[in-house]
View 1: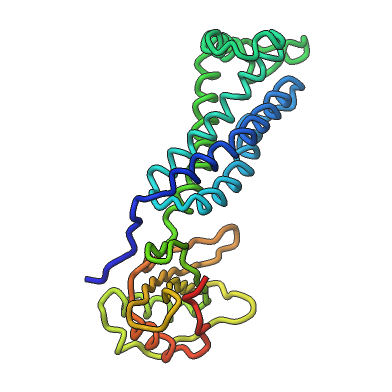
View 2 (view 1 turned 180 degrees about the horizontal axis):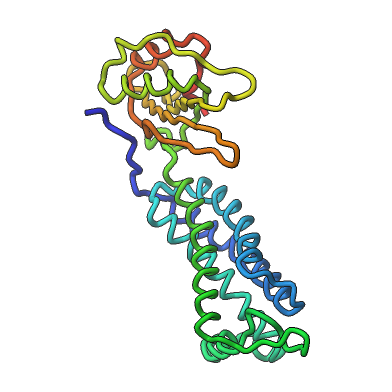
Length: 282
């Protein structure tokens, strides 16, 4: 049975604390911008939180790698917590805007303010005679929950993906890699050979150059030679297949970060000479 990459669960505590502290101002700024959109009646339900979560998620993914986080569950929780701070922070900004600077550090009254605000917020309509509306607490809290979950998932997922990337514990760095497109049939043939430990029977693989066809595969090779030549290199391969439709593309994972030996990698290169030959150094 072929082994697969498993994150160690470790992280750099000092760097992680610094990363979280660095993202606090960004989360606060994005929350303040969301509160401004709400005050100006330009707040689009779901759409505005979605847009606000994107830069927070992008910055989080970069800092998750910088923090050497190899603990995906912890990474997801950190990303989700930062997004929660951003989303709930918009209502704290609303409180400060309504009550003035004296409410800046009134954390004690915020829970009551939040409940009252959500209960009496108009999701549909406004207070004008042309578009009258009536607050619906059930609808308001449903929208609150959906938007909060959306922001938390977007940010948390990017942290999770960063923590799932293969990492060399000996060299203390993320693994470098290369990605090559293959013909759809070649990708499935390679995946079957990897899953059955029969790479010696692997036929010639066809790579794809230029524009991608409607059906193609991807071979991603990631590894670390530990700065030297030898048989102790760690190498992982991921094989997937993508089918492009008229409206969307569907990608199927065939092999996920499977461990192979340097000899097996050499055999794959022998079967497909067009593959890049130096995938193992970042």
